[in-house]
Every structure is written in C-alpha cells, then in structure tokens.
Amino acid sequence: MTGGSVDRPRTLVVVNPASAGGRTASRWPFLRQALRAAGVGHDAHSTTHPSEATAVTRAALREGYTRVVAVGGDGTLNEIVNGFFDLDGTAINSHAVLALLPSGTGGDFRRTIGLPTDPATLARILAANHVRRIDLGRIEHDDRATAPRQFINIADCGVGGEVVARVNRSGSKGGGIRGTTVFLGISVRALMSFGGRPIRLTLDGEITETEVQNVVIANGRCFGGGMRIAPDAELDDGRFDVVVWPALGRLRTLATVPSVYRGRHLHRPEFIVRRATNVRVEPLDSRPLLFDIEGEQVGRAPATLTCLPRALNFCVATP
Image 1 (tube, rainbow, N blue to C red):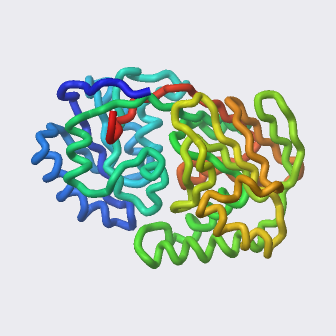
Image 2: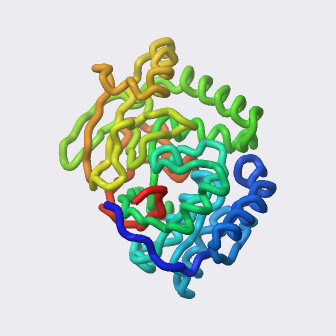
C-alpha cells in the first residue's frame, strides 16, 4: 500500500561512518550535498558504537522528528528500525517515516525495495517522500536474556547464523574486495562443515520435524549479499516467506548455491517453501542453532517469529 507524500518532515539523518568497511565516512559528504541540492532539510548524527543508532532514533522520535534516514548497510538499517519501537514492541510514533540512503556491503534490503545508489537520485526520492506501509518481523527468544528485536528484511538460523558468527570472530567484516573474499571463504567452509541439524518447525500451528542447513524467515527477498532466497516475498502481504534449505550433503549443497543467487531453487523438491504469520524454530539436539538478522548474529533457537502487518512507513522511489 502506498500513501501520499508528507510535506517537509522534520528529518534526522543517522550516519554509520564505519559501514561498508569505513567507506561510508567518505561517501556521506556527497550524500549530504545531494540532500542540500534537493532541498531536503535535515539534522545529522554520526554513530560511534553498536546500538547507538537505536537509542538516537528513539530519542529523535520522542523529540518530534517525523522522519529518520539511515545512512549505512542492512545492519545500520536494522538498528534504526528497532529505534522506531520501545522494548515491548510498541511504536513510538506510528506516523513517522523511515528512509534509507544505502551505503553498505550487502545492500540486500535495497534490492527488495528498489532503491538506487546514486546520491542525486536518492535525494530526489527523499524530497518527494512517497510512503509505503510495509510489514516487519519480530523475533522473541526463549532465552529471556536475549532481547526481542524487530527486523525489516530477513532472519535466518542454521549455517547463516554460523557464517555471521565466524565472520565476527575473524574481525574481517567490512566492505571492499577483501571483505567480500573473506566472507565468501568463510561461507564455503561453513557450508562444508555444518552438516544437517534436526529441528522442529511450527508454521501457524503446523509442525514439521526435519534436518536443515538453514531456515530463512523472509520479509524481503535477498540475503547474503544478493542471494535471492525468497524471490516471491512481498513487503506488505502480512506473511513471511519461509524457505527451508535442507541438509543435502557437501557437494549437493555447494552445487545448489548458484541457483539460490538466481532465485531458481524454489522449484527443487528438497526445499520447503511456505508462507506463515507465526514461525517457531526449535533445535532437536544440544548443538547451538544460531540466528542472524540483517547480517548480525542476535541469539539462538528456540525462538518465535511473528509478522507485524504494515507496521512501518517507508520512503520509496515511486508512489
């Protein structure tokens, strides 16, 4: 659903200069100049540590800002999404708008929402401020020490969570050719060593027990830097696209990866593809089954994920 534009929203731009391996710090002056040229009035805040964007967004919405713009990648976007809500999931201002000036490594949500990367074009989109009401997801872990989180794109558990955990431990997360090469190398090693994990998957009350490599709970369409894991997902249909990547063995798993990048894996009979509003993932052995959201490792199963229909206003390219 698309709404009309909002006249001159009070705008805060939250910049993560460390995103894209630090390249956002040098990209931001060009984005800022493009915003000024397009007549987009704004204040700006540059973050210096993880989770700062969430706290800054909450404070800004309480102070009367009506639009918050993320400058960074999918992780930055996720932090700001969570800033639109209190810890209990209550929206701070249900009329406020989120916008994105993408400047990250993966750019997976940008692909789904159809945003360009050119600064001048992005600035014109913000100036027009066409708004679409989109769904979000919320994940709640059985481990009460892990706080619930909202997500805008994709949550997954299994080998995806393991890859993110290994990347974080390596200290090699970042942009550029080296960052991409390191990520790819870690991904291949994880795929080769992870094997299958037995889980109980409950989709809107329907229970399946199976062995998996990964369970993807998708609001958007892409993850992993361009893998079209859920090519039919819609951001405002009130349901997740749930894609279960089965345990296939090492060689078959690696052979499947190219079809996932092209979005042609859904017709493979070994994949489970469903739509659901409520998803529960429970491991059936003692090994940790890690979750990641928007490329950030956030906890482990068991966990319950709920689709929040049309929970957020997002600034889009076309009405």
